[in-house]
Image (tube, rainbow, N blue to C red; front, side, top):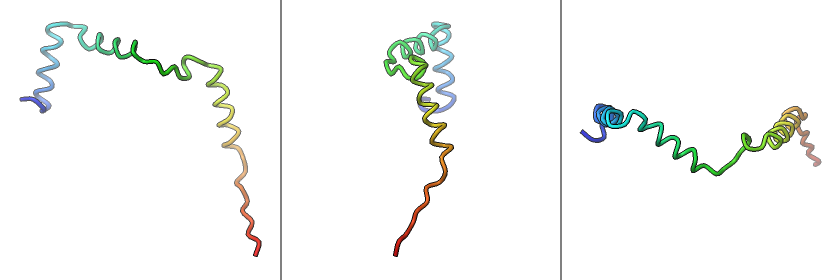
Length: 68
């Protein structure tokens, strides 16, 4: 039955019976379509961002003064 756990398991078994690399192929297609880049594509950018975050996290708490 569609939409149930057992139905999903049957579908997965059928897909794997037809092609043992069925899910690997789908995952590879998704990976190739990615175009976001990110830190893996630019390690220098990751270093800069990490340094900024480290500086910010080590700052003292801002003191709020109320003049009345």
